[in-house]
Image (cartoon, rainbow, N blue to C red; front, side, top):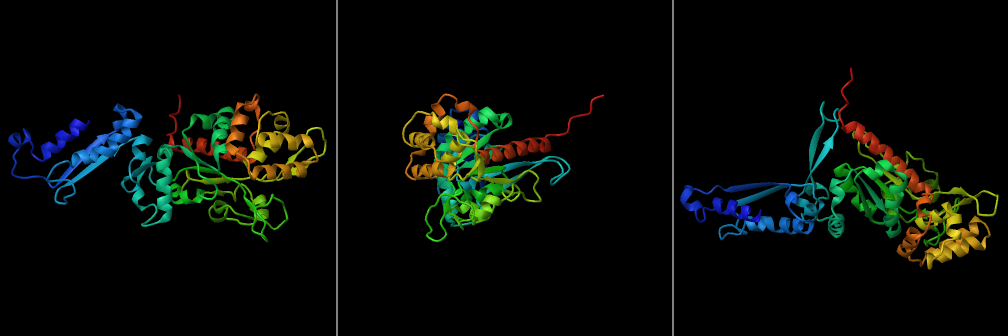
Length: 386
């Protein structure tokens, strides 16, 4: 392919044999080269090298380079996240498929210029560009995206999906660890792409008086420190309001776009019965780890391990009711190693039978239903059988 590009360039510039076989009296001011899916011929790492070098090859001539008189345009169509990964946002054009009836009577595609996503000189653009450069750029090729809070969710959600959600497991889901304090920075990009998105984040409760982290409680006048919850969806700051929010309040659905929606999932109170007890109490989880433990108290009561796992096990076995256990877990989480916790849980016997924390289960159920609807909307109706 590189030799082809060199040949195209030399033919344009009348180099070598081209100077004899083609009239050299005039050089076209624009050289347009189109490459269709170069990844079909290249190893993943070579795809990245190719797209970084291809344009330079086309400009490697004494009359070209940085000189403005003769212009070169290179258009590459691709389904490769490796190619997109090495391409600046300003140069990307995203083709979004739309169903029949949305903007036309037949299914169509609309082209989105990512140059216009963030405007100019925006700190959010710098963050998103650098973040996606540090990740795989498969966001542009996904059926849907899940933005998660931290390493524990990133490691465990694929296992939850594989075990419990057949449709999601068959779909192309881009899973990004972005953190609750930064997920909202992807809003402009997600809105422009019209990408179905689930945000799995933490409620991040603060004492409104001291402005310090606090264990979640109802009626305590707490606020959230999570910018995504405050400024994006559900756009609420009071913890009481967040705990009472309906599924509709946690979902953004543009009225003019039947396929695009954003849903947030965060910890909310739920009933729990401590092993060996009969009374039903209310748990107020603070983060993913204690929500998972409250949903699977018997599992964690017998789980071997160190760090957070050991502290959770000791808290559950010490008894004292849900509030006591919750307080001990909250204290352990403040300095706990969450990635180590996730590895201990994943490697444990019986991991496949764990109950998914209900706030995450609600979000995954929503995403699976929306993906089914999206497939029905985009695919043409089957021909009637006779």
